[in-house]
Image (tube, rainbow, N blue to C red; front, side, top):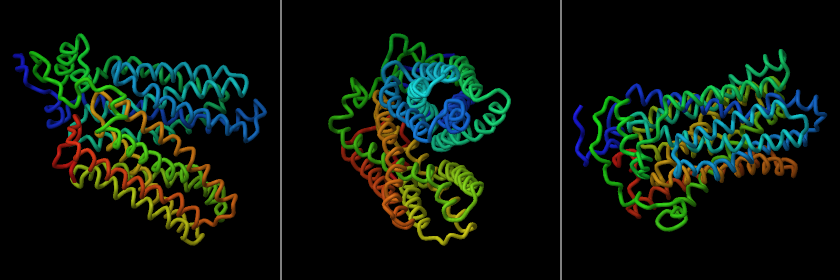
Length: 454
């Protein structure tokens, strides 16, 4: 097969061409990793009752375990996620899977609250760092036409993994006890390591931007798996990529966009985790049974599936940022309305279903919009930083709701306050777009200007 001339850029071919079987496999593998992350995040919830019984833990002790995992995720996104820009996306994903494997297996051997909390903090590092990198892998290997759908499917892996993991956990706890659930998670992480080694090569975007010693050979191996001709030489790096390090995100022209994306992530997670955490409790206080409250949470996830899929299907035609803003405003409206609807079971459940639609679509929108904001050589750094700030919102939202409820606020009041951050998030993303255009920054791997500008 003849080599292409040195001016050819395979990134353009990936963005403009059809998805090959190889690219589909890479995206599918990222979906599986995201599903494992979803299971790992909620594994304490699945095993909480059994652990509390064996260790004699109070509700406050269980709260410490939940918080340790979330804190680890924030630290992982902030500290491990940026390694994707320095040592590569693939190597960082492998490191995160190793952390998950060790952390989950170690949890099965823990015999005290302190041990388990420390292990959950450690495991969270792998979850946070892994999510920050697989999001980038999907964005960089998907074509323009299928990128939003691919990211939507990746984000669906999270709730699907949590749901299937819950079903598996019920069986494992009954048959073998709660440690077996953690052993199961560790073995799944271990099984994914050879899959990543076999089917997830390094990102072409990363190789061309960072140019490690064997970059050309690695790029040509990837191109061969995509049935594309090899390159004679690497295409030149753009001026936006050349020499750009992580600290550049804190300087002009990137600092404002970095701050705006962090603010957007914080606001989205504040609202979303309020509803994800409190909905079953609120529904039971409004007269539904405990099973009815759980059913409401399941309906929220069901609505989320529809929201993610519709976002992926429509984003290219409508425009990613425009649709993201619409979903965020939609979540504000439905969340505020939830505080006003009558306490009638059917009405409450329909409202919960609708909230789930906009809630998961808004989270998915962040996965779709944020990677393209940052240049290639600082993309996982920026994405990880924004995700870590988002974790602060995930803690702040449920906490603020608890304070407002304890202070005697009615449902309409606290729902309106917790819905308001979505308007800030939508405005922040609109500002990010304007700032990027004014700075004249070209973002490699982003959707085509005709679409991104909508």
